[in-house]
Image (cartoon, rainbow, N blue to C red; front, side):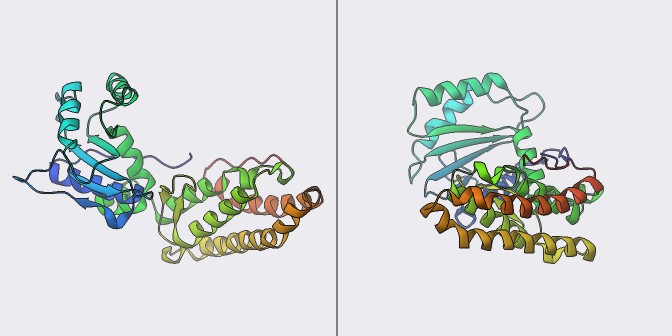
Length: 292
């Protein structure tokens, strides 16, 4: 993904680290469900942040701020998992979030634990490399926890919006020949989620319903020329979407019509990608390559 990556230093204290993890959890799970759990001196069953995902499953996160020579070990994972066994409501997933860098040996330990179904829940570990990627993907997390670094590196609202715009359009619904489209629901949902991103700045994965990335809504960007181009793109996406809504019943009833209509969908999308690529190339981003 052609998004600029900034390396963020881990927070200096456990309170700020827990706040950061809470903000990231809001981008992955149901935001209203995310809460800091318990407090110092209270029984937390190894859980610092609690959340519920979009399927109603319960998520517990243990925050581990490790110092320079400290490491998460298999023993620590076992201890935290045993504590989490007593958590109510019963967890579907225990996440250990750490400021430690990625450790393949530790990943293997967790994979084995999960394969053996040692606990009634699965275990994940968020290393600092993973957390850093999440910070860079989310404007809201960047803004709330690392605004000074964002300004220092010159990541403007327009640049961030453009990066996420590329993510939204770099997918089969816009890149592949319409003649090869096999799942009309997928095509329609991709158009709908792109329309949502253009309106709200949030880009979601349509399968997991988790957020892929987010930026400020276009109304909050103070670049009139950029907003004018985005308005043109939004109108073209809407045109394709409405055209598809009119045609989809015909495609189901008469599949041979897809071949007759493929040309007009390819033309409309090609014009759209041409506008986008002109913007991407002017900002040093790779163009989207289409196959029709």
